[in-house]
Length: 358
Image: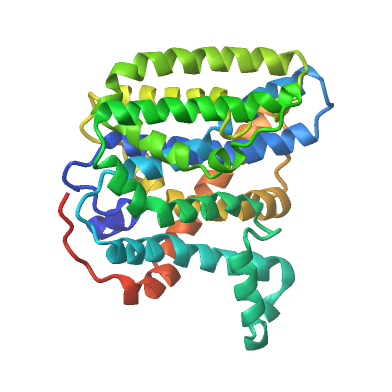
């Protein structure tokens, strides 16, 4: 009985060649995505330009690395796989990603606009909304759409990375950073950048995650650690001086890329001596995707409205921590229940297992 309960919480973690640091990074990215929405809420209720506002903005920058970490993790996990037919890949991704997206999308819509959206005469409009993009009820879904787009590109990117030497891959990563730098800073000098499509696609970040997970990146790890540390200091100074950081360190800016890479490498190094993760890490890691999907509703509807938790109560730090902890645990339990009931049933028709050579 206890073994069955444990299986529900953490699943099968005896996977051959499993990289322990991947679970650590998943948990960090999951906590960060809850953190960024919590501190941004607190900042919106704080006097603009005050010390509290600037501190919250710095934490917002730190937590904002969650988006790049999720994309990097996708690249690190998916691109190394060899000999997987595209059909099998897309079926597996559809089962694990698209079905939960549709289910949570519908839940958000009916929670905000009513049960009438489940009636047959609304089905076509609901499908149209899902295909259009993230709903206003769950704006954070934009990241999932980005990841799905990267899945479409995965078979092609796999072919490229498996057939180029390491030095060429390193050069490609260098070009990505140059493009990100130009796209970030040229507009600040009144020059319109032509690289936005490449940068905003997140394909470079996806490939960067693969690079950081492979042996060929080891020679550059110390460089990325130093660059990430300097990027963090520079950004903190920029924010503290009252500057608007949005145009300066948005998602794929070189400073955010370097900072996210430093987190990736640091966690990877710290996990070298570990043979097993804690129960908590394994639990949150297993349900990280569903937590990503559900946490917005839990944060704003359950914790804020139903439990009446004030993000500024008990001091800003105390309020943020309480809201983050409650959101994380309620989201984890909610994700676990849905994943093992409704989502599990919907995924059964697509869950045929085939062995893939690695």
